[in-house]
Image (cartoon, rainbow, N blue to C red; front, side, top):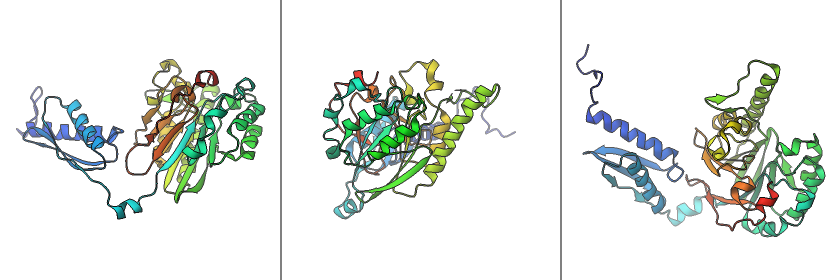
Length: 354
């Protein structure tokens, strides 16, 4: 046996510790939304952490150093990252920023008429695209969808929607979908669509999704027929989403769901109901097919931001979470996450999202 093998209880050599630490920091930089997509080299030299490469903003440079310091507070960090500004020729070659407005869980009813319209009057000035992630109605009455569309009218930008569990309650989803599409909102369920916006080919693939839970705490396709039917429905919706995403051939691919693909955007909800709020199968479908962004709703007490295991940015845009009529994101394919555009709080959100 080689005397180079590490014996139980023996400390690894310093160079091996350095390799592990550098890899750990690289993984953290990839997973952190502030630095995801940046080409950052991590080295351990003379006991110090050295960061090299180029980033697009001073904020990303500082964020990279912050990540390294948090993981190794006892080490010196030598930040050699360069902030590189695009030249005029390179800037012209970049696609313009896409402005995406997204909302979910409006739960609109007759008694809410007039409360949403004031907050949507400037939608066409602020956004290039509207995404609605389900639960448009309160009890699945097509008339409620009509009330919502009256608030939205006139719709002056492209819009896509998926339906949510509330929209399914009275088994009148076909009527609701026809109502939405008659007003210019394209309803997706296991399919996708492409549109050109400002010279960018944008593709949206949508499904309601379903529950089942997340890795380590999920249901399985086993046992009683009812349990198998539950999980099989989720598998079917995930497979449909994956197929729709793979069929998109465009610059920007968006996954639109009602149920959540990740547990991170459910934080704040009771752990016991996670299996009824989403499924890891949806995230697996997104990561296999590839996407740039994913939006969902459903989790009223959840968190806004998260990321799939494969690095796709996820946003929970349920109105109780975003606290306004719609969230506005700017996305420019520069490698960073979608940027939240500042907006005031929506005074009516508590009422509309009950």
